[in-house]
Image 1: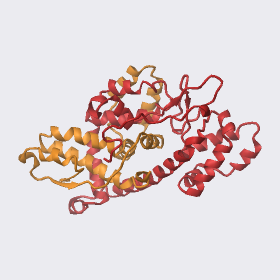
Image 2 (image 1 turned 90 degrees about the vertical axis):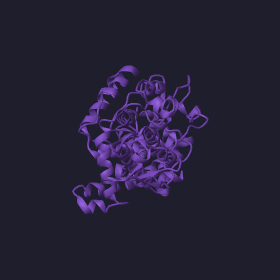
Image 3 (image 1 turned 30 degrees about the horizontal axis):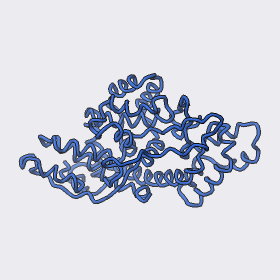
Image 4 (image 1 turned 180 degrees about the vertical axis):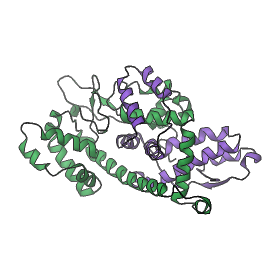
Length: 141
Length: 233
């Protein structure tokens, strides 16, 4: 079980504010890698997304047939990711980028009530940590 | 109209022109369309040896990037015949961005492959894998387990899929913020505008009467900043 949270400096107060009971057994390391995202960077990642999972490709085909925002929204909300491989999920996380994961983490941290909640955040923060480790070239743009 | 996301052929945006994004697939698909044109012999000879792998490699080197910019700009009229709208004012920066993102993707893919290679690792070996692909593998496994059920994470991932697959030059470009609100992401990401910047569709540029896309300033990001997007994460 992973027990180390890689948190940005701005996220650490959110963890500190949790009850001592919830924090027990967890440790925090500061996430020191920086990445400034931008719409152009995000758009390029999305353009380069190459998926192979039949379920995801089917989603695309269905979405293209929809004729209104409401219909596309309903399709998104009706779609789950069960059966989609971790490899394909990993690609989607790359396309989303670390900033979106930071938003998720900042939203989830104040709502933590039990260990299971923290273990979810640890997982997302760890994926972000590896994303940040990979985004070396675009970080310089 | 050619899109860079060639896995998902896209509909032309009604009343708008999609600016080409020079990805390996996009450039390769554009060249494929040029090859079936009845003329343009010189251009076709010049791109005879360009396949997707070569384009991919070129995009990652400074020399290759310059060569591609020169080629695409010099042939922009021909490319426009097959629906590929090059914006010369931003092409160099687009190509640099694509090249850098390809490099980063390869680094990331390597981590994912290493993590998959450790999929059978258990017990003490896994425990010792701190700061290693083993940690990444366990994180992916955990995220995969709950992301499939977590409503916001799932919505984010599926919306990214929609942005990549159908939003470019799509009918709901311009309605993207409404979509973000409809799926509830605006509440999580600090407004529909912020959500749209984190998961942006490709902007379209409306055609001018009697004019082409090159007479129109390139699309720019909205002024101002939003938390997290213009500041380091």
